[in-house]
Length: 154
Image (cartoon, rainbow, N blue to C red; front, side, top):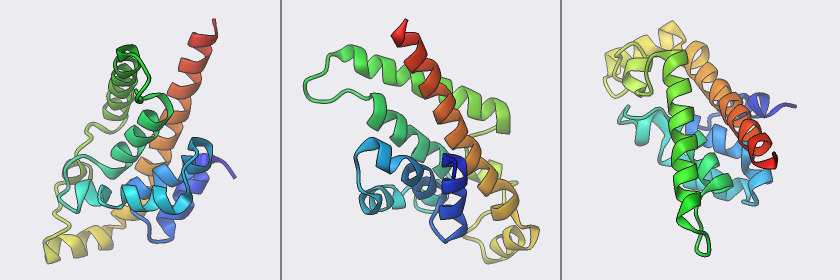
């Protein structure tokens, strides 16, 4: 199964968007599946259902940070490199979907408002939109990671 399929499977099984993205990469990042699900849980629904930054984005940025980020013994170049990869991911996500904001991505429907939340479900936005955001975020991380790795190998 591909990483986008793995992420989609987690999303289809009641894990949020952020959890689904990070969990797809957890084995490769040296973190347990449970830890990946727990640490990313608060970021779902645009950070605790506030509908701010899309959870698929925050999950993807956690992956980039875990893979490329600056640790205790690293120089500042690692931080700057991670920031550049973050910008690249965010630009690509915005180009593809028009926004990184959960509320905007869900047609400005407020998931905390009972009427809007019912409409989100009636329109199938979680299935038609959020699943796509999750899978595409994983694909973008894979692409950016591969491009970065190829560039640094030269």
